[in-house]
Image (cartoon, rainbow, N blue to C red; front, side, top):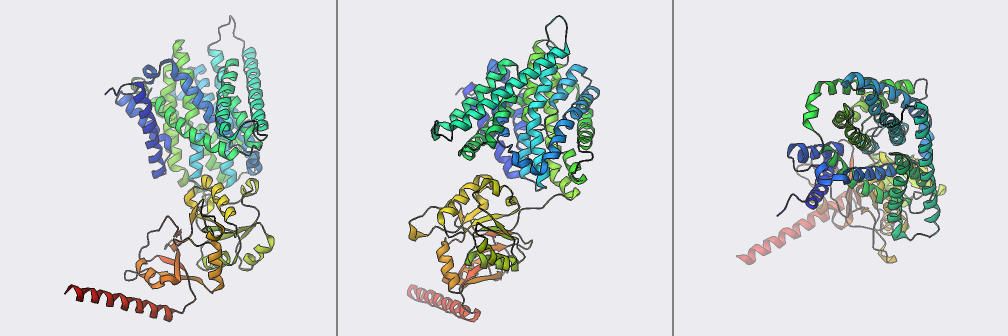
Amino acid sequence: MHLDTLLVKIALIGVLGMIAQWVAWRTGRPAIVFLLLTGIVVGPVLGYLNPAEDFGELQEPIIKLAVAVILFEGGLSLRFRDLIQAAGAVKRLIFLGVPLGFTFCTLAVHYGVGLSWELSMLFGGILVVTGPTVIGPLLRELRVPRRTGDALKWEAIINDPIGALLAIGIFAYLTYEGIEIDPVNIGTDVLVATGIAALIGLACGWALTWLFPRGYVPEFLKAPVLLVTVIASFVAADLVMHESGLVTVTVMGMVMANKPTFSTQALRRFKEDLVVLLISGVFIIMSATLNWDVVSRVQWEFLVFLALLMFVARPATVLLALLFSDVPWRERLFIAWIAPRGIVAVAITGLFAIRLEQRGVEGAELLVPLAFATAIATIVAHGFTAKWWAHRLGIDQGRAEGLMLVGVNGFSLALAKALKAQDIKVEVVDSSKFALRAAKKLEVPTHHGDMLDDDWRHHLPLSSFRTVIAMTETDAFNALVCSELGPELGYDMVAQAGPDQRTGMTTARGNVIFQEKPSVYDLLVKVGEGWQFSRTRMTEQFRLKDLREYLGDEGMPFAVIRPDNSIELFTSVTQPTVGEGDVVMSFTAPATAEERKEKHEEKREQKDAKEREAKDKVR
C-alpha cells in the first residue's frame, strides 16, 4: 500500500477536517483550534504532510480560490435589514475603526516583533480583519443583544476586503519595480483596481439575480453556475490586480443577499456546506506549512506582540471608534475584546509571504508563523472567554428556553396556559389578529405575522427559545415552517403536530410532538372531550415506566421539566431521560384521580393473575 500518495493525503485532509469539525461541535469550542492542531500534528510534528512539496504550484491557487468562496459566502449573510439597529456602530467600526486599527496594529507588530516598518504596515493592514468564519460560530454560541452581534458580524465581513486592500497597497510599495517610488501613483492604482473589482462583483451579482428568478437557469444548475461565476469573477478581478478579487466576491455576495432570487436559501445552504469543507482543508494545509525553526527564534517577541494586539490595539481601536456613540458602554467593552483572526488573515498572509520570500525580503519568513500565532491566540482567548465576558458585563441573555407556538387553536391555548402556570417561557405566533385575542386573554405574549415571511421572521427572537412548535390546522404549513427553520435553528429545535392521516399527508419535516404522533385534528378532538395537561413529579419509587402504566391509553407524556425549569419534549424520535425530581407534563383524559387509580390497580391485578397462571402451568 502506498500511503504517501497525493490522493491519500487529500482524502486524509478531508477526513481529519470533518473529525475536527465534529469534535468542535460536540465540545462547543471554535473549530479552527482543532483544525490548526490537526494540521500541526500531520505537518511539522509527524512530517507526513508537506504542502509545498505535495501540492507544488497548486498550493497558492487552491488557497486563493478557497478564500474567494469563503468571502462570498460571508457576503451572502450581509443583508441590509440587519443594519437597522447596528448601522451607527458598523459605520464607526469601518470608517474610524479601520484607520485606527491599522495604526495600532502596525505599532504592535513593529515594537512587539521588531519587523521593518514596511512589513509591519503590511501585516498591520491584514490584522484589520476579524475572522467572519470564527465570529459566526462564536455568535451562535452566545446570546447577546442583536445590535452587538450584527456589529461584530458586519465588521468582520466588510473589513476582510478592506484589510486585504491595505495589504495590497503596502505589497505594491514593497515590490514596486519602477525607477522612483511614487506613493500617489501606487495609491491611485490600488483605488482604480478596487473600483473595477467592485464593478465586476456588482455586475455578476446583478446578472445572476436577474437570470435566476426568470428561469433562464434551471434549478439543478443554479448552484454550479453560482460557484463557477464566483471563481471566474474572482480570477477576472485578480488579473487586474492581485487580491482585488476579494472585493469582487464580497460585493457579489452582498448583491445576491439583498436581491430576491427565490433560491437564495437553497444556494446559501449549498455555500455553507462547501465553506465548511474549504475551511477545514485550507486550515489544515496552512498550519502544516509552519516552520518550527522560525517560530522558536522569536518566542518572546510573539508574546509581547500578542499582548499589545489583544490588550492595547483592539480595545483602543473600538473604544475610540465608538466614542460618543449610542452604543451602551457594556456592549462597547464586549466588542473591544472580541476580535478573533481567522482563515482570511492567515491565507492572505501566506500568499504575500510566499512572494516576498521569493524576492528575498528580510523578515518575510516570520509572517506565516506570526499569522498562525495571532489566529491561535485570538481564537482561543476570545472563543473561550466570550461567554464569560458577556456574563460579567451583564449582556448575556442566557440560554435558550421555553417554547414558541405557531398557530392559535384549542390545543395550543391549553398548552400555553399549562406552560405559563409552570413558569415556562411561552409565546404564540399567528397570522390572524382575531385568533391572537384568545392568547392575549391568557396574558401570553403574542406575535402577529407570517412565520414563512423572511423579513418579518428576522425580528422574532427565535434563538431565545428551546423549541419552535408548528401546530396550525394546516399540515402543509407546519411542514413548511419546519423546513424553513430547520437549517437555521437546527432540526432538533423545531417540531410539529403529526400529519392528519385523513388528508393523505404522511410526511413530517420536523420532530412530531408526542411519541404517539397525534395530528392537530386528533388533539382538538381530545380537547373537546375535556383532555387537559397534568404534571407528575418523578420519585425513586415512581418512575416514567410507572407513569406510562398509570396513564394507559388515557394520557400522553408531552415534556419533562427539569429542576432548573428547562424543558425537553417527548417526540416521535426522542425520549428525554427522566430522573428523580423531574416533573413530567402529560396530556390526559378528564378521568378523576380515583378512577385512574382504580383502573391502574385493576390492570396490575390482571397482570399478577396472568403471572400466577403461567407459574401454575409450569408446575
